[in-house]
Image 1 (cartoon, rainbow, N blue to C red):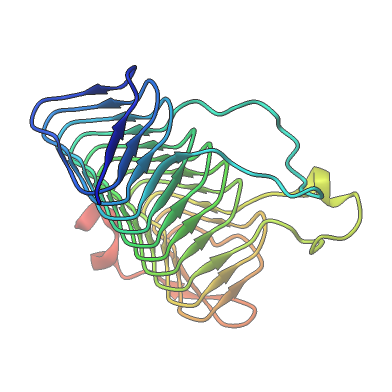
Image 2: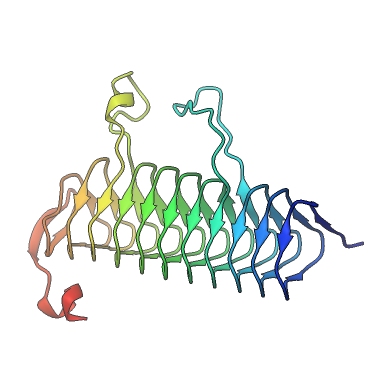
Length: 248
């Protein structure tokens, strides 16, 4: 037996279609023409633009949870999730409270977007991608299947992150109190590209139009328009001019 539960304080636009067993929380705002699949939960305070599609079993606006020994001690409740116009959200996606998703973004099946994350317009968040908290993702970025974006990272516009790329933010691997002051994610400058299965270590910056080859382990910054490869990664040569962002 199907059900639709809409809090009396929620606002639903014209032409919105719902699947079975949907729950819409308090003060939620859903724009015109949205398609909400079955078993979707939209939590309190979420704002959804027009013509947004949310597939089955997804959760929008989930409150964060903390382990007893978590390094994150913030107690402030995040703001409501904001989803822009014409966004497509796949099945079994979790988008936490405090996330902001720009217009025409695709968030594919099984992806997770944590609290205090912003994702720019026209970006693709691929299947199974995890974006941890306190990250900034630019516009027209491609995060491919199963990429992992560690907390405190910044990825600028037009970057490409291939499948199974891993980023990290703790050089102390969970040991010593010193790590609390030195935890730092990665930075990908405009147009940077990271090949499949590469690992980017804490605090590394990959500069504009730089390329990291597949399988590399990057321990140091990569200069603009350079190709880095190997374990550990070293500069091999310049990026070909026809591949530079300005020539696309």
